[in-house]
Length: 473
Image (cartoon, rainbow, N blue to C red; front, side):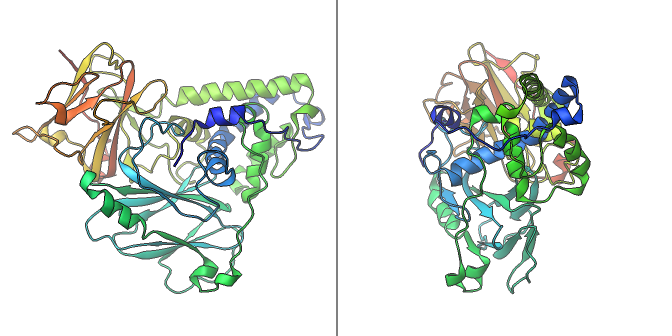
C-alpha cells in the first residue's frame, strides 16, 4: 500500500471553499461576550478533536481515492500483511508488532457481519471496534470472544430487524459508522505466511449477503461530509466538520445540555456553517478558542498517567462511552498522543522519555541499558514489545538492521542464566555478542513505548512499570 504524508497531501490539494450556508452563527442573537464565545469554542473544539482526527482517517482510507492511502469503499475488509516501518507516517507511534486489518463499516442501510476463524495455535488477534467519537465500543478477538470461530453482527441506531441464526453476538452502535481495526500476532519471520493465511479467513458480509440475498445488496454512497482539509480542521471551520459528523447518530442524552451551549456559536447536528458570514471579531474569538483548546490538549497529553521509574503509566484514556463519560479533554489528549489506543484490559502502554537520572533520553549523548530481572519481565498473556520512536515526530527510525522493536517474539533474543534480560539501547551497533538484544536508538531525543498485549490482571492493579532506563558506557 502506497503511503504518503497526509497533512502534506491535503495541504497541497486545492479543495474548494466549503460553503455551508448563511446566518450560521447566532452569536449576536445570543448576546454572548467575546470571552464567552472563546470559551464555548474551546470546549467544542476539545470535544470535536478526536472525532475530526478519526474522520481524517476515514476520509483518506475509504472516501478519497486519490489520497494515496485509499483501501476501498465502506464495508470492504482490507488486510495489510506487512509490518509498519519508518515510511509509515500517517499515525504517530505506529505499531510494529502485528499485521493490521481494517474495515470501515457503514451501518446506515443494513447491519454488517464479521466472520472470524477458529484459532488453533494460540495466536493472539483482536478487532477493536471504534465509533466516530473514538470510543472502543467492543472487541472481537482472543481475549474477549475466545479462540472459536464466530459471527458478529454490527447494527446502527435505526435498525429494528431480527437477529438471524448463527450470530454469536450483536454489537450495537449509537452511530452509523464504525472502524473495526484488526491486529494479528506474527510470531516471527518464519510465521509470516501462517499469519497471512489466517487473515484471509476474516470476512465481512452485509446482512443480505449473510442471508443469501446477494441481489438485494446495494453499495451505500459516501456520506455527505465536507472533504478533510487540515487547515479548516484547525480553525473555526472545525464547526462544519462537527455539525456534519453529528448527523451519523442522535446526540447522546448526557450531552444534550452541552450541545445547547454549543448552539450559541452555530454548532448543531446537520446545520450549515460558513465562516465568511461571521463578524470578524467573533470569528477571531472562535479561532482563539480553537488555539487554546489545542494547547490544553497538548498539555494534557503529557499527563495521561502517573510516572514510576520514569515511565508514564497511561490509564483511563481509552474505552467505552461509559468509561470515558465527561472525560473530553482526556479523550482528545489520548487521540493526540496516539489515535486508537486499546482498552487497558486489551493492551497496556507504559511510555518513557526519561532515564533513571530524570534526563531526557537522547541517543546522540548516551548509550542505555534496560535490565529486567526475571520477575520484572512484562506480564503478558499474549506477548510484549518495546518500540523506539524519534521525537518530536513520534515515528519509527531507519537503522542498519531494520529493527524497530525488541519483543518476546524477537528471534534469537538472549536471556541471562538467571532468567533476566538486558536490552541495549544505543545508536551504534554494540557488537556481535549483544546485537541480538540491541534496540537501535535515534541519534537525538527519543521515546520508548512498551506494549503489553492481553496483560495479566495482576499487572493492572497496581499498574506494572518496567525498570528505569540506565545510562551505560
